[in-house]
Image (cartoon, rainbow, N blue to C red):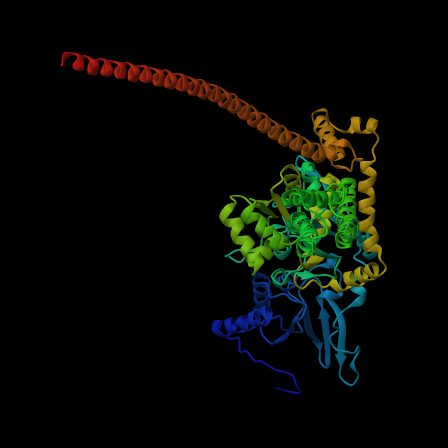
Length: 637
């Protein structure tokens, strides 16, 4: 430790010490620590060091390599191995008492593999510039002299709108395309879009340490940078450098728009289900209460005659029912207690139950109710468990990385997706939006701004956008060690604070609205014949989803209730008829039985009389015969 500066010495005379030095660099780079290395070695070793640094990707903005070259001119291999993303200084000693300092990033990228002298020292004069090593060379990257950057592009409205035609592509606009055009005009550079091998951003490194997608191309230094809704993440920061934010976004998911509730049950929706039992209990209780108010005082101190308590109970129950239904009826009693109870019941029924019910019913009929939407991840998890919902995510996007490495609810959803779905990764957000539009049990998670734009594009009536899930920031992805990122940041901060980026985003939505207002004649010319029928069907479906004036169809529940009442009344009538017929038939049988009984009684009476007469004649005859026999005995004697 000298003057509060930590110094590490490496005698790189053998391979083992060289490996220790590169391990030291590896530790510094992985922990994002700055390091400045001064080499006092042979020129061949300098060339070897530059090759190893580039191959092992030890290129960072806070990692500086300083080479003591000596008096000889720079070798061709040494200059060739210096890339402009490296921060390399070289100190030469062209003559005694004189040292020159050269810096590769003092030149813009179009002069790659070049050095520029930035300072020198002379004995007796000292340094020409202070400080000795400039931290930034401000004028180097203010004008790129028409340098051409290679920029990959993927179709992701509203950031980039790309039309793919066979093996070529055409960028038709987009907010990030306008930002890139503004930067190119300001810094005087050009850019060539190219179609990447994989039309995905790329989210994480694989097991062998590679990075997929367009971000992998930037990491491999096969592309200069990438702009297009690149979300910042800790994992991506290990492979890329990010500019100042271009968008403050948040995560969200979309589901199919909640369908309309059954209009036949509209009569039950003005009150929640917890209220209806209380109303039912009120209907049942108030009748007996009114009966008790009338009957009990009269039983204690009789003031009027009650012919039938059953009839009085029925009258009280029926009257309270008519009051609750806002109908007229005859009061069962004129006592003050009964009238006071009836007044309270009428006020409660009119202003508490009926008016609230009518107001809620009117609002529901004016704006028909829909199913409860899914607004957060907990509700989405419940829907996936109980209602068979499937969740989709864009392949190798920031949302994909959030699920793959997330905890809590994200981990649960990720496990459910892997267990229940065979394919849950999509190539683009538009593909998922169309999938959600055509199915009622699908969900897609992505950036909220991207989802909102696609919803406006394909019809807002088909989708429901959830609440914000997490805050996410998007920026431009650069190569590690990019020297001109600070110049880019100055411009981005200026246009962000001035609201220009927000205005660019709003302009994309305005363009979308203008595209929707194409006249039918122009639309007939633009839409192919095989797509016109699908477009017309989609338009009719969208019109059907709009609010409609109140019609009798919305009141079908009333007619269903009337039909149920009529059917119930008909059943009761049939039951009464059957009972009446049964009673009538029983009465006829009973009358017939009475006649038979009467006939049998007459018969029995006649038979009894005849038997009595016969017995009387028999007794007279026997008596006469007895007397005659007795008289004969006397005569014989």
